[in-house]
Length: 287
Image (cartoon, rainbow, N blue to C red):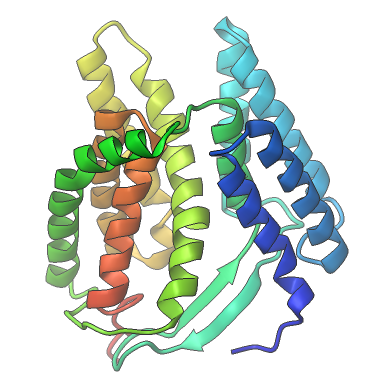
């Protein structure tokens, strides 16, 4: 595990605080995010121009949410392209902080790196702050989780069967204390940012187009799932195929509840199952 000064963790603790504040007050989340960006710039977790790129993303998200007609369409396209560029780190200024490096979790597995960064997370925060409702009570959250439970079971079964059939993983039950750190980052950084973008923005907006809600909904799930798979191509075609299929399950969970929390729960559940019971992140290629 690399030696990291404690100051390096502070921006990400504040970023987590901004995420959690979304379920308290929107303005609180934005203030905590601003503080996180300032501290990240000071500690080097963000390079010089990154705060400007983040501020611009926030402005675009706010304008998109407050406009109608062709202005909204144009701003939506700009936000889509900008968010993708940020998520793929095509815009400079967003280094990642490595927490764990080259860890082999089980025999035959590829080495695993755990790192954190701001790029995708700020997109998720702005979507939930300006464009999308959150659950308003523990009771509503419970109802959402009950509705997506069957979706999780089917999605997890189908995706892991596919991964086994492709030789991407093997059954490998294990326990590691890393799961606690991994789980926190995976749920509130990875799952939140990806579900906010692919389901809360892409799927939601496509689903509102057209005169036939059922057809639009199916098309929205399909397109969001394909895009989700495409951005995972960096992990290889097997990973991208599994991600596409998983994306269908996440999309159905969102469609059933119209809540990001529903698709986040299914997404995290599949990822946790993968981490705890199968080769993680994947089997190493046989030379």
